[in-house]
Amino acid sequence: MEKLVVTGGAELNGSISVSGSKNASLPILAATLLTREPCTIRRVPDVSDTNYMLQILRSLGAEVERASGTVTVCAENIHADAPYDLVRKMRASICVMGPLLARLLEARVSLPGGCVIGDRPVDLHLKGLAELGADVSVAGGDIIIKAENGLHGKRVHLFGKHGPTVLGTDNLIMAATLAKGTTIIEEAACEPEVTDLVEFLNRMGAKIHGAGTRTITIEGVGQLHGADHTVIPDRIEAGTFVIAAAMAGKKVTVRRARAEHLESLFTVLRESGYKIDVDGDRITTGRIDNPTGCELITEPYPGFPTDMQAQLTSLFATVPGISVVTEKIFPQRFMHVAELNRMGANIQLEGATAIIKGVKKLSGAPVMASDLRASAALVLAGLCADGETEINRLYHIDRGYEHIDEKLMELGANMRREKA
Image 1 (tube, rainbow, N blue to C red):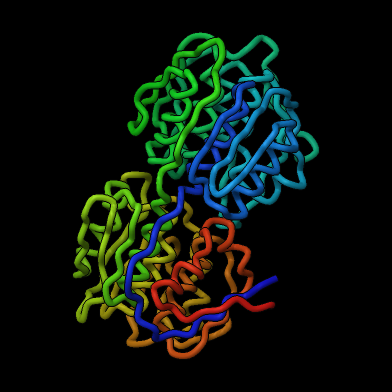
Image 2: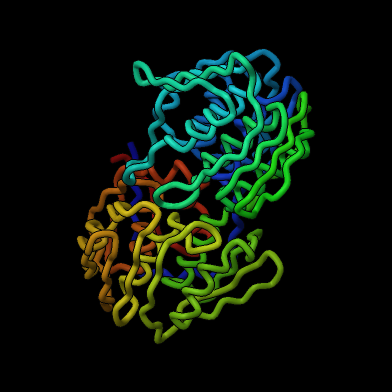
C-alpha cells in the first residue's frame, strides 16, 4: 500500500493534458459485449477502475488487448456470470448487466462494491430491465436476470429519489439496443458520458435518439457490429486541475478539455472572482488575490457535478468569508470534511450541507482518503498547506485519476509516493 506525501507551497505553472474519461470508458467497454465482432476503444485511461473492467470482460470470455491507451475487445464467445471477486471492487461493474441480458437473455452479476459514499441502490437498474420483460431476483449476493421470452421495448420512467441514474440509464440503453420494438426512457440521465456511450452504440449500428436530453428513444435492431471509438476527455479530471490552478497556480492551462462540459464549475468559480479563459480545448486560470465565498448545490447534469463537490470544498476552505455547499445527489458524501478539518479547515456539517468559514492557511497533516474524489480534495489541500500532508489509502485516487501525481509535478508540485 502506498501513500502520497505532498509538500505545500509550490506554485503551479505551465500546461497539463486531460486523459480520456473514466466514467465514459467503463460503460463503453461493457458495451463491447453486445457484439461478436472486434471493437477498438481509444484514449481509455490507465486507472484501476478500467483495469478491473477489462478483467471482468476477460472473465466473461472476451479477448482483450491493451496498448498505449487503446483497447481492443472481441466478445465472440461469452457467458453470463460476472464474478464476485472482481465486481465487488467497483460499482460501475454493474453496467455489464444490460449488455449481457441483451446478448444472452440472461445475466448473473454480483452486487457491486466501490467507493462507500452513501446509499447508491441498483433498484432503478432492475426496475428498468424488468419493464423490458426481464425476470429479476437476488440470491446469495447475486443479481439474477433472465428474459426467456426476449426483451420488448416499452416506455420506462427512470427518475429516482436523488435524480436520474447515470449507470441505470446506461444499462437500460444497452439492453434496449437489441430488444424488439421501441424503448423510450423518460427522465434519463443526460450527462456527457451517457451521450458518449450512445455515440459508440450508434457506430455499432444501434438506432438511438435524444442522448443529452431527458428523453431517449431506442429502436431495437437485430444485431450490432464492431466499431472504433475515441473516449471523450474526462471532465472531472479537467475540473480537478482547474481547481488546483485556482488554489495554487500562477498560470495553468488545462489542455484537451471540453469547456462545454464544465460550465457549472466555471459559473461557481467566476462568482467567487476567478477568471477563466477558454480557447478551444484549452482552459487557463490561476490564483487571485481576493476571492469571495460562494454557494453551491450539486445537481444532475447540467448542474454542478457531485464528483467535483469535494474538490471545490477544498478550495472554499481557504477562500475568505463563508461558503455553503449542499449535496443533493449523495447527501452523505462529506467524508473529506473531517480530514480537511484535521488540516485546519473550519467546516461544519448540517445534514447534507457544509458551512465553510475560510481560513488563511491550512497545515499539513496525516490524512486518510475515503473515496476517489475525497482523495483528490486532500491532494489539492496539500498543495497550498504549510508543511507536509501525508495522504494514506492512495489506491482510492488511482481508481479514477491517471498518474495525477506525475501530472501535477509537471506543473511544479512537490510530492512523492512512499510505502505506507
